[in-house]
Length: 166
Image (cartoon, rainbow, N blue to C red; front, top):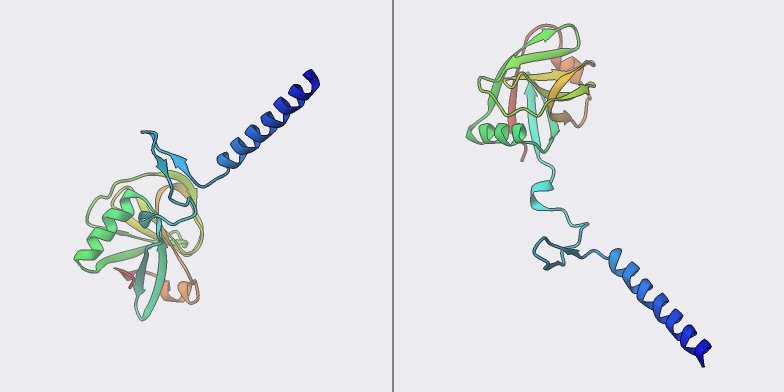
C-alpha cells in the first residue's frame, strides 16, 4: 500500500512540474500589479516599428532606417515641421558633417561607424559616413541601399535634406 502512495505522489509531482514548465514558456506575463498580460510577446509594439527618413543629396534620394532613441524622436519632430536642410563639409575623407542648428538629447556610445551610418556628434551636428571611424556618437540611422552613395556625396561640401519617409 505504501508503494502505491509513493508512486501516486511521484506521478502527481511530475504532472505539477510539467504544468509549471508549460506555463513558464507561454506568452503570458504577469505585470507588476499581478494582472496577467495576455499580449503575445512576438507582437510588435507601436513604438517599436521601424521609422524611415529620406536623405536627399543633390539629385539623389536615399532612405534610412532610424534608430529608436530620444535624439531621433526630437529629429523626427523637427522634420514634421518641415525639411531639415544641413550644409555639410567633408572631414578627413570618410564623412560629411554639418550643424543641425539645434541641440538634441545625446546617448553617446563608443561606436565604429561604417559607410551609410548617420550619427549625432556633440549633440548638434549630423554626420553621414562614406567611410569608417571610431568615436563616441549617438546613432541616428543607417542608409538602406548604398547604391550611388559615394557618388552622391562626391568631393567637397554638399547640402543634405532630411525628411520623414512616407
